[in-house]
Length: 172
Image 1 (cartoon, rainbow, N blue to C red):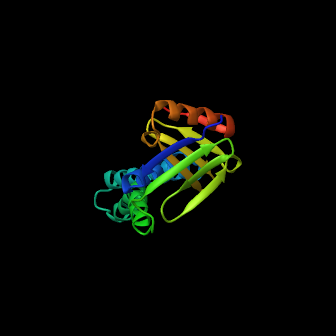
Image 2: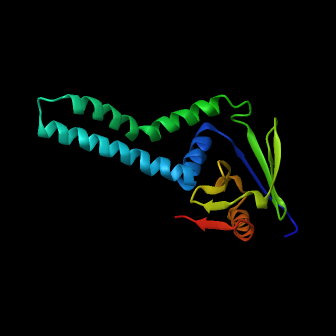
Image 3: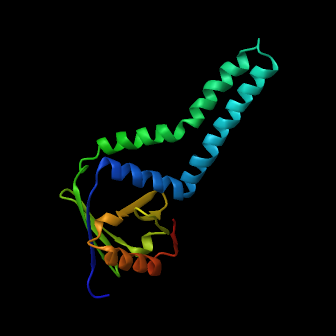
């Protein structure tokens, strides 16, 4: 691969929230957050309903478990709100991101900041319908499909990422 792959996109709030949601969905920490926390909320709500059906006069169980269950069930919404708040504090929000991808890694930057990441940094890669998510611990790198000049460039990136990232998957 002689010629580097280029990609460019605007790091908008919608793009950031989408990438954050996907990173949570596919990371180990995020899977537990999106599966276990709402499940705890569902169990608490079920306990509140069972307690209310068993003894309608006793509202203490319902009063404790109902709000607790609602809180746990709403954690994904709270996480989205936190992502929007985090994005609002970024100094380079809503800027154009330029990426150059080669055998050595990914070089990306905005008008304010630039970075170069070696392929060995990424532990996991996921291709979704909307883009490519590269994960390393709690950090992620997002490249939307629309950032590439054409579908050929996106396919070249997919093949390169597949050869460089140990755990690479394609999701529907």
